[in-house]
Image (cartoon, rainbow, N blue to C red; front, side, top):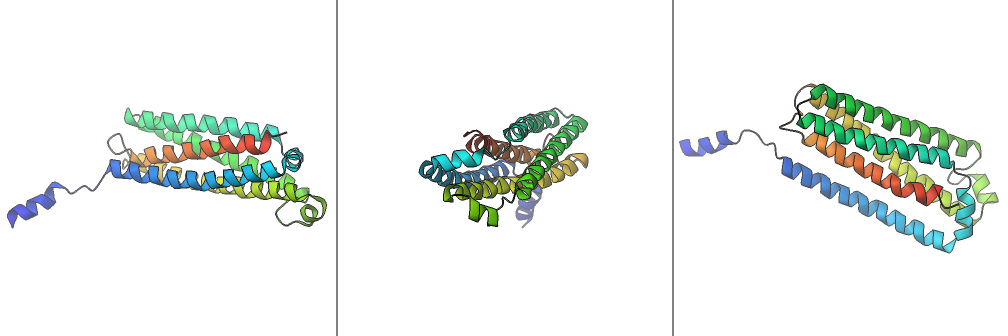
Length: 209
């Protein structure tokens, strides 16, 4: 009986970084399958409607798309630097870098808000009368995919920001540290996924002129 109790005392900490990382990689794989399916749908419709997709892409602001790409690439760098800082025991630097990444993520969403706002002001949104009455089927498909895929990506940005919030709190209170970095590591992995998806979305929608 005493031996049995000793086994339980030996393992009071259920922290398992490997399982945590494997779980995050599995989640990332399912997300890549989701967006991969959408990319295939986009490719098929673009192949069927090349001229309409070219015409519809002229409505998008390439500068805003390029700016968002640059700031997301910077944010991937800052989140990676934060994990390195945490591993070296630089708690305040790690927090500062995650906060910078968080601010960049907010900036991305603000840019997307204004970009969508311009489309809405021009009467362009899924199911709008202008789209249905004045655009070809190919153009309607283009904007339908644009709103679905960039909207889904924006939702992933929001989820990433929430995870960052937990990571910042965890590092601040010491629960996330050099010996237990999983939350910040997984936050970084997720943010790299968000960045990677946008790197594909940007040329597909903005650079097909």
